[in-house]
Amino acid sequence: MNEGWSAITGVNGAGKSTLLKLISKELKSEKGMIQGNALVSYAQQETEYAPPNLEEFMMTYTGDAFKIRDLLGVKDEWLGSWDVLSHGERKRMQLAVALFSESEVLIVDEPTNHLDIESQEIVAQALESYKGVGILVSHDRHLLDRLIQTTVMIKAGELIKYKSNFSLASTAYNQEMSHQKKVRSIQEDELKKVKKDVQIQREKVSLAKKRFSKKGVGRHDSSEREKINGALFTSKDKMDGQILQRTATKQSQLEGKMNSVTKEYETGITFEGSIANHGFPIFIEKDCITLYESTKLCFPSLSINVGDKIGISGKNGAGKSSFIKYLIEKMGFGHQYLYIPQEINTQEAEELFAEVSALSSEEKGELFTLIQRLGSDAKALLQSKLPSPGEVRKILLGLGLLREPSLIILDEPTNHMDLDSIEVLESALSAYGGALVFITHDRVFLEHLSTKQWLFETSESEPYSLTEVL
Image (cartoon, rainbow, N blue to C red; front, side, top):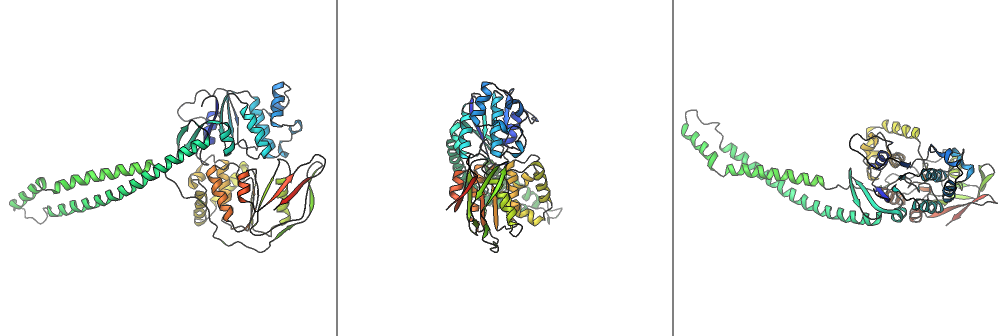
């Protein structure tokens, strides 16, 4: 990793965050060395806890500290308010502390998670201002192409390096995969032929062994025994044995080559269960709710019907997540719904794993299939000591889908997800026959999926508002 920005990419569970924690010395390597990482600042993807040096940063009144606070829009009143800040506001404070450290190496894991479009631009400008060795993990294609000079892909435990931005690296990798698929197809055809040849040679050798067996030859019939001994050394049956050995060796070599070609697993989710239509439409009466202190959010009468895919967007802190909690409380328990929040803390993740452990073998099999089709190795994931936030979301999603919900509510579903999984999720939710309500700052995801949108807007002089856009 040289001066400038390098990206580390790969599917959830490939080892991206583990590699970052090794570089930052948060994890100790079992063997090998990492050099040049003496002074490292690490902004993690999780925002559950405030960064250790937050108070020092906020109480520093130098020109550089003010510049960083202005750059990321960090407000003085945010100090001491971590628990009530939105995840987007926490992320901006987290990055500000990392930039303030003036480290030689800056590691940033999913910096645009939770951020609205305006904040994404602020963060991109802040990261562009960094002059050291920058290492980025992100599912934000726009940010990757804007910042990155080097792309490192983690594929099946191996590192593949490209001196280019993500889009060019991805194109080059896909071309290589296309070539490998052709090679694999040729190898499969050749392997079938070789296996057939091995079987034929084995049958010939077996027949030869029977023909030259001395069973049934009398002990005193020396003439017949000498004929058999002579035939064993002079007939073509000896050649058959040698051909079998060579052909079996060729089969073994081909199978080894096949294993060296990257395997691709089938992805994509289909919904086969029936969706309950009773209880729809869900009506939400015109109301105002208090977000914090004197700030209120007001909204008109709204409804959710079967087949609706309602995309929610707006600035950080505009009340989107608060409204979702209000919606769930108002619904009561009359609807079979799946809700996945923005973040899952450590305790919730542990409870989730315990719930999975208690499933029947049949249910586990169905869950593993769903997770596999979201692009992760389910068994390896559940055995992992440090599952990534993206992997935890896949377990939550898979577990929820097993119950065939008639309403799915997702708060920032693309957070922590790798790019391949986002595409699979988008396709699956598009085919879903129930009602879907989702909050997102991913413009492409919003436009592709929503049939109508609820836009949250802020105001300094008036209550925050929610407007329905058809």
